[in-house]
Length: 392
Image 1 (tube, rainbow, N blue to C red):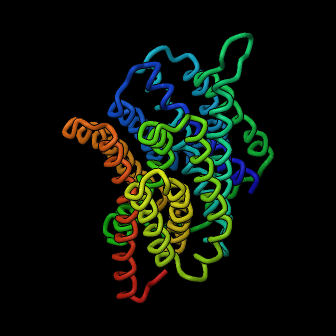
Image 2: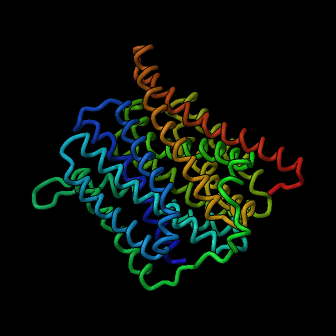
C-alpha cells in the first residue's frame, strides 16, 4: 500500500509541474501553441510506448525490479530536462520522462488491482487521492521554486524539474523492502487480448476513458496558460487556481469513492464527467468572474479514471492485467491525438479569426466537450450492460 500510495503521489508531482513551466518554456524557446501541443503529444507517446511493454517486462523480471527501473528513470529524466539547451532536446527529455510515467501507471494499476479486491472503487479512488495530493502541491511548489536563487542564479524551470523529479528516488526504498503480490489466476481462465478485441464493452470503455483523460490532462496542462493569456493573470495567480483545481480533485477522490461503490461505477462516471464538462463550458461562456468553475470542474473529472479502473477490475476479474494494459495503451493513442488537437485547434482558430484569445477559448472548449463525450460514451456502456443484465 505504501508503494501504491507513494507511487501515485510522485506520479501527480511529475505530471503536473509542467503547468507553471509551460509559459516559461514557451518564452525561452519561442515556440507556438501548436509546438506546445506536439511537446505534450510526445509525452503521451512516451507514455503509450511504456504501457505497451510494461506488462511484458513485469512478467519477465517481476514487479519489484520494474518498479525500481521506472522510479530511477524518472529521476534521470529530471537531469536530462535540466541539461536541455533547445526544444528538440527538451522534447526528447519529456518523452523519456513519460516512459517512466507510463511504466508507473501500469505497475501501480496492476499492484492495486491485485491487493484491492474489496471495496474496489473506494480503494482505487483513495489511491488516486494521492495522485491528486501530488498534483495539488506540484504547481505551487513548482511556480515558487522557479523563482528561487541558488548560488546567485535563478533556479528556473530547468532546476525546478531537476529538484522535483529527484524525489522519485524515495519510493524505491519501500519497493526494495516490500513483498509485491503475484498474479494468482490460472492461465486458462485469464481473458486474452483476442477476447478483449471482440468485446464491444472493452472498446466502449477505451472510448469513454480516452475522452476522460483528454479532459483531465487538458485541464491540468492548459489552465495556467489560458488564465495568463486570456485574462492577463500572473503566473502565480494562475498556478494557485490550478492548485485549487487539484485540491478539489484530490478531495473528490477521497470522498466520492464510497459513492461509486454504492451507486454503481457506470452511472457515477456519467454524472461526474457531465458535471465537469458543464463547469468548463460555463466558465468559458461567463468569463473571468466565473473562473472558479474551472477549479470546480476538478470535482467531476477526478473520480473518472479510478472508477473506470474499478469497472475494469470487476468486469475482467481474471486477467485484469491484460485488460488494464489493453485499455491504458489504447487511451495513450487517444491522448496523443487529443493533445495535438488542442494545440492545433488553438492555432487554427486564432489564425482564422486573427484573435488568439478566441483560439484559446476554442481549445479549452474542446477540453470541456471531451468531458461531456466521456459521459455520453458511458451512457452507451450503461445501456449495453443493462440490456445484458450486467450493470456494474
